[in-house]
Each structure stands twice: as structure tokens, then as C-alpha cells.
Length: 93
Image (cartoon, rainbow, N blue to C red; front, side, top):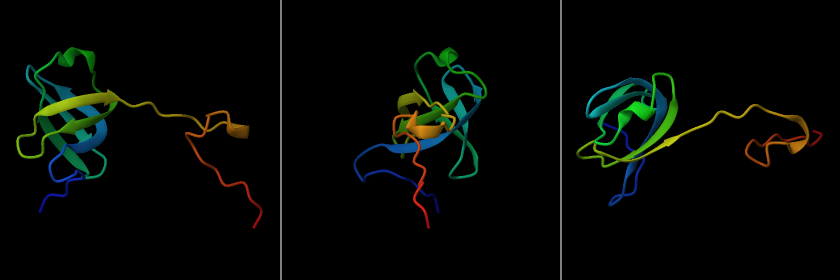
């Protein structure tokens, strides 16, 4: 049974690293499913390269991509310099 994270009449999401791009497809290693997933991507796939960390919004029944967003990995910096993107609990226990 497949696990999808989406609203019933909306788009599903997949997040992971690009494994390959084709003429009309893009493959990513989905970090939640722990496997390579292939999606139909009808736009210019040359803007994404192997190893890019992306999030894909797609139609779950057809695997056609609606939106792709490039994700960035933030390094932790002391004193809240990442503007709240990474939370670290500094309270004394």
C-alpha cells in the first residue's frame, strides 16, 4: 500500500535528491518512502542536476509534476542567526 502525504483533492508531495533526469521525466530518491520514484515532468528538466535537493508537488494518480522547488540545507549557527528556520531549545533542564 502506498503512502501519500496530500489532501484528498490536492497535490501529493515528495522530497529528496535528484537521481536522474530524462526528456520528460525526473527521478528522485524519496526520503520518506526510502526508494527512487519517477515523475513525469514536461518542462525543462535541465535546470535540475543529480544531487539537487528538491520538493515535488504532483498529482498522485498520474505522477505528473505540478511544481518543483529547490530546497536548501541550512547550517546551524549560534544565537538565532538562521532567522527561526532551525529551532534549538536552549532552556536549562
